[in-house]
View 1 (cartoon, rainbow, N blue to C red):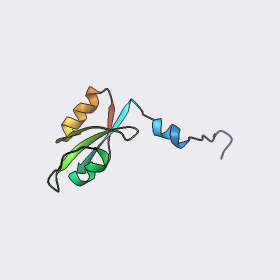
View 2: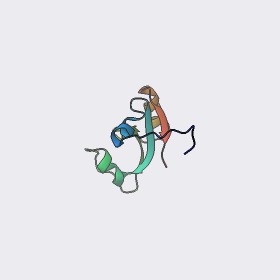
View 3: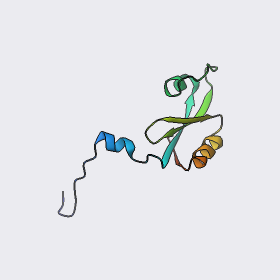
View 4: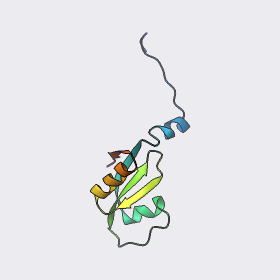
Amino acid sequence: MTENEHKITVTQQQLAHIGEGAIAYMREMDAEDLKGKFPGVPDMAPGTKLWALFAADGKPILLADARDAALAGAFENDLQPVSLH
């Protein structure tokens, strides 16, 4: 570490709240993976793909059948969307 560098420590709890209320992430998911993230999601045909929008802390916000619809959902909730691959 050089003289002008500072060490910053962030706890897991602090890290979990970064972006809260401002950032959401989008991810295309298979129907099989949705059950664990969206409780109560109805059974779907295997291989069905949907777009999921999650809060920065990982809480599910919405499901959509198209990327554009998930993106619109983020903007409607005043969230800056980012994509996860």
